[in-house]
Image: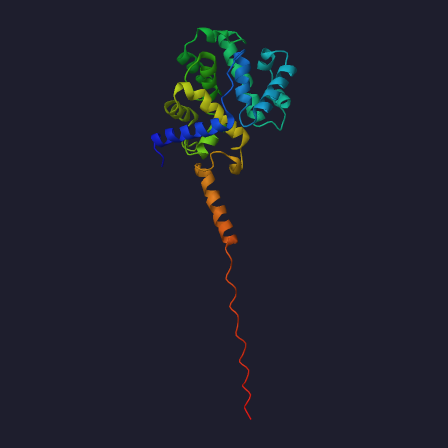
Length: 257
């Protein structure tokens, strides 16, 4: 069972290996808080490209974000597409989130965030119904500059396979608290982006592409199948012993005349 110090060291190895593979994260530019949060919700268990395309479909189909707020989940799900990951869940959460904020601040711009402190902003969104902690964490980090490590299903899956988190016994909020202790504020955005990128490219839902992963040498989840494959390969390469030949029956000696 890895200790907290072990997890901190492993996270640093993860960061260095993934940074070598993917480079530095792009700067976060929040031009519209509502759009930023919608993109975060849509990006769970899919690629950034597909999430951006889905956001664009919502923008084109609905007159504005207030129109999206008052729309039915079924209509939103149809716009997202039935093959879009977790479309039913996202179509239910999005208008529910927008409506709760609107009823409290009468705003679809969310300029109230400008007057909120880091703790206050995070607490406000965490108290909303059907809003998961990772959404509040994204808003706190990107909109008010708080130290936060959003843990959605992608981050939980990747770091669970790396034995840094245990999604089976920890809640989303507990996992975020662990990561916020383990990762210093200046590194938080970088680590989160790198882990999300790995989850999008290689450590995917279902069967991960471990053979292409830069972390395969120290990932506990990749070690087991690797050892099994190595044994199978070794057994296949090992020459089998030739079957023992049976000695032919000795022919009777001819009597000398």
